[in-house]
Amino acid sequence: MTVDNYIGGEWRPPASGRRVPSTNPARRSETVGFAPDSDRADLEAAVAAADSARRAWRKLAGAQRGALLFKAADLLESRMEEIGRAMTREMGKTIGEAKGETARGAAILRYYAGEGMRPVGDVIPSTDADALMYTTRVPLGVVGVISPWNFPVAIPLWKIAPALIYGNTVVWKPAIETAVTAALVMECFHAAGFPAGVLNMVMGDGAVIGQGIAEHPGIHGVTFTGSNAVGKRVGQIALARGAKYQLEMGGKNPIVVAADADLDLAAEATISGGLRSTGQKCTATSRVIVVRDVYEPFKEKLLAKIKSLRIGDGLDADTWLGPCASQKQYETVLEYIRKGREEGAELLVGGERPGDPALADGFFVSPAVFDRVTAGMTIAREEIFGPVLALMEARDLEEAIELANDTDFGLSASLYTRDLANALTFARESEAGLVRVNAETAGVELQAPFGGMKGSSSHSREQGQAAIEFFTEIKTVFVKP
Ligand SMILES: NC(=O)C1=CN([C@@H]2O[C@H](COP(=O)(O)OP(=O)(O)OC[C@H]3O[C@@H](n4cnc5c(N)ncnc54)[C@H](O)[C@@H]3O)[C@@H](O)[C@H]2O)C=CC1
Ligand SMILES: O=C(O)CCC(=O)C(=O)O
Image (cartoon, rainbow, N blue to C red; front, top):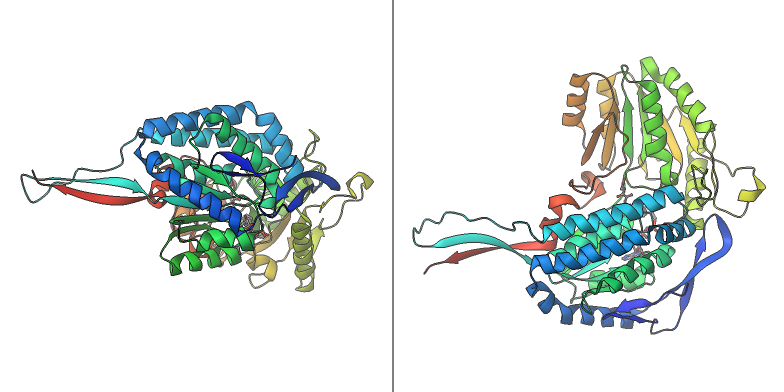
């Protein structure tokens, strides 16, 4: 598939005429599509289209905007198989996960479609008995959406849907690695009949189009998910020109296994939270902090289960673990594995290219478990974004919680215990935006606020009702007859 930009309600080739391939990480010789390598002229056209559409769009009733989101949801759902397959072929996650994410995308669109009919303000008693004082919400104007490849449907939709329902128009820059998936999502919006210019998509290099969005004076708010390095830069650029910004970045998420935990369930949650999507979730489990009394039995169960995971092309129905999403991710993961060994952690299993010749052309790494990891090691501190688990021992639950909080990040944290007092202590003490007891670190529900503490985010929240805080501003109105 040759992908075009989508600007002002039309598919348009990039002004430069240049395109870059999107390849299959399970078979690097296979090209899935060609994405536009756009330049600033394309971005200018998209911002101009979004700007000219925004006054009419904000004037529509919320229910009218919602009706279009409902249509887009139906279309997305009807193309779940096709979109799921494109996602698997472009970034490697298993077809089950990819279709599940597409279904989640439809649910996100429906949730925000309903928001068009919900209250947006309060009536506040004025000290003047004759006056009416109330708050309402107004859109920011044009919103820039910069999204990554790891959830190429869900993440952009949980940004685009609230942006649109609250009356903003959008310029979206998807990750080029998942260009075809993004174009299929965009086709659903096009077929739903959104007015021209309300949603625009421009693909290109992050340093050109992503940075261009951060810098553009015609873009009033920027919402970003991706790496910490890029996120911080986007935030600084937006701040310097007075634009609103929202950053969702990395995690170094711990699972804590208490002495009274159900060890089978804890091992399953460690595997599911740490290794699904090949560990490429910002909510992925990467530090496994186990209380001394159960360290050895837990480790035994974990290793036994990991050895049974089937690695392969995500399109094969019996594959559990696909490849890393790109050569860059693959090399990063191997580099962290090398560093882990060099710094003295013991590699118990995995961390190598699987022997199966059928996998030789892909970016596959067998799931790695490091033992005896200490808090100062690089693999305990930096986000790896790959199938790597770091086992750490704690004297007791108190020390486990201290270790869990000993990180620059604060996205998600999980505890396995049967003791209610432990659960409540963990919920109170965890420095994370998402705390889960007897559930894996990953697994975000679209109707609840999502975001991190410390270096994981810009301290705002996405999804659920919380999204209104970023995508609107409050206007306080005082009317005296
Ligand atoms: N929080 C999360 O969900 C994600 C975290 N990551 C982390 O980032 C690491 C690197 O992955 P990448 O794909 O390279 O992430 P990235 O941060 O470079 O990419 C995310 C988005 O930002 C855009 N971008 C790149 N440079 C930009 C710039 N200078 N200005 C504005 N936008 C720019 C990209 O084109 C993409 O759309 C991963 O190993 C992982 O640790 C990556 C993707 C998602
Ligand atoms: O855990 C999830 O479902 C969402 C993870 C996420 O938001 C991310 O990886 O960026």
